[in-house]
Length: 140
Image (cartoon, rainbow, N blue to C red):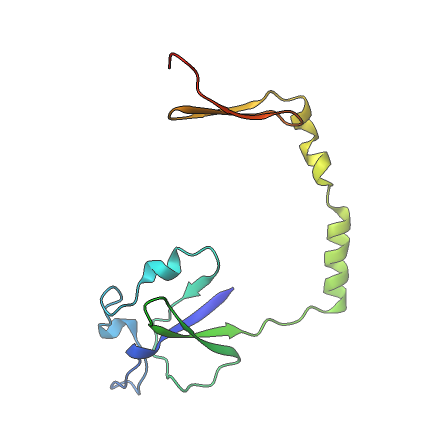
């Protein structure tokens, strides 16, 4: 999902007719706006526009206000997602019906050797259908 983020404290009028523009010299790291806070999240994807945006501009979709832990307020645009037609839903159902059962995908692991991984002090061993162990090998 793409989300449009408008930093409310940084929306301003300019010679181009108003709006927010990253190229206008807005210091992303300075004004309490932490890009890493957004970009490093696994929960959502964020696109920050590089073109001017008017705060009161009409958007197709839902616009919601969110506040980060530092009190910085953002307006987020959640676009409308077109609903699927019945034929698309039927096609998706057919694809799901054709998918292989997970147990079929894991069947080759029944005869495969155990997976062993050593990280620092510990060794981890996973044997499909058997044991999962964590241990330390003496003398290493």
